[in-house]
Length: 427
Ligand code: SF4
Image 1 (cartoon, rainbow, N blue to C red):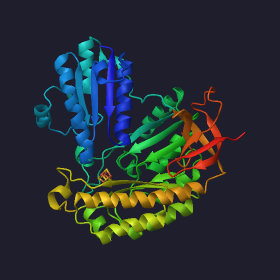
Image 2 (image 1 turned 135 degrees about the vertical axis):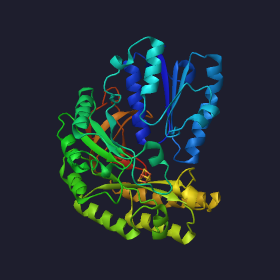
Image 3 (image 1 turned 180 degrees about the vertical axis):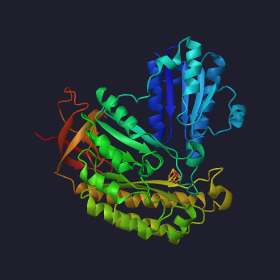
Image 4 (image 1 turned 90 degrees about the horizontal axis):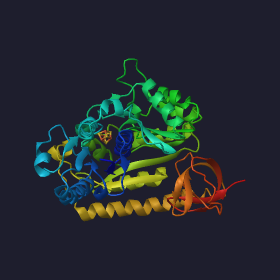
């Protein structure tokens, strides 16, 4: 048994979970393989936040059946949000799966592999630290207490549990020793970090502690909730030198009735005032958001409130998704998924068109400016990285033989597009 294949779908939290699992498999002596057929251990890390994600997992899982039938020694594991507290239905549906694991519950797989490989897995797997890329994730709070009516996450990832500050700082220090320069502190609702710790701490306290980690160059955090984004957090972003000026603040819908039906706990006006406070306190901040279109009962006029909010605020990035009914959520039990699919698609298109224009304008204004870019790797034959505002920047440099990975370089922007910038290294 010497190779593994981990397939991941879903949010950054899932990606972080997969990185940690891969790190553990690496410590057990297993190496990554390019496809399931080359691997002895196959893990699907699943997402059920939307029907489309669930369909992809089912498709992938089904494609593994003949592989497992041909070679019973392969270990197949399903982890992530598709796995709830009860697994009987999944076991019936996918009888060829060896292990089912809830989010972050890696141990059943580690134990099974330890047994098969005849090694003491406990001794072999140290603290789970992510793979060492230039920029990586550190989960700081698991679960969510909000219970938005459309969302399955609290049922699958459980209630909020914060990791202690000292443990997170230690992990950041270990990552720096392995070459990491940037960490993103992750949580489903990162702004509520710390309320459950014995000595109450908040995200601002944690950002301050991580900002002090020597050798670390940048700190980001994801995802925020408008109700928990306190002035203390906003001030810490403004004041701490390593904390980047970028905030992802989902608003989900522009209409107050729809927001109430979603149980988001704020109004359109509350959200706008919060954005004003953030922009006033953090000059040059970039903003991204998440939006759902076609939520139960959303009329055309209500959807237009969403468009107006996007038009007025001018986000750098908008992640829009069509509502899909998730079994077990409050919306599925109490509301009607009554917006036709074609209408949902048309609303998505309207947001895409509007946002493309906004992002084009925002990015064109950056032409000729220089930014510090932390180089993460090569893509499409060019070095790429991000600036502090989380803009993807490609570097046009004839000197591709120079290894820029992990370097902080100043790049002068020479070309802009809605979703990325291009430039050369300013000398
Ligand atoms: S804040 Fe709402 S949308 Fe976000 S994870 Fe929690 S329940 Fe889901």
